[in-house]
Length: 180
Picture (cartoon, rainbow, N blue to C red):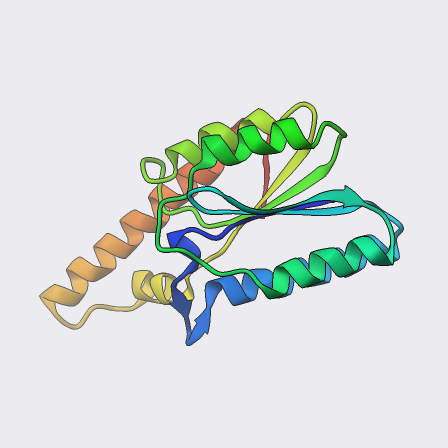
């Protein structure tokens, strides 16, 4: 199991008063513990505009400790993630087949074009799983009955963003990436 975390600008924001990156780290910790309990190799890559950390997949408590220590020191950066460089780095450092779990966010097809194009390159060697965080505030905005003209425009914009996001996720699925 190779955990890949996009620590770029999309995960620096907060949702409902909690940092998105904090939620990702918590989920990654659960995944790492589960992999170790099932005697799987566990590795980690954290990137933004460049690769910040890489821990090659290994088995056992020592590997889990290395991943946990690395997760404790993750910091988000207000930069655009460099997906081509990150996935090229990953391709040269990990040749073994792996369930590659990418924690990221997807806004729309245009903004996420590099992600959509690059994550598909993991196939067929790896089994990519993209975990795209949702924005409950945006989803609420897209479903609330507008009381003003301004609120109607906000709702329309939210609906458009959610539709574009779904199109990007569908494109990822079409490229053989499992999406959660």
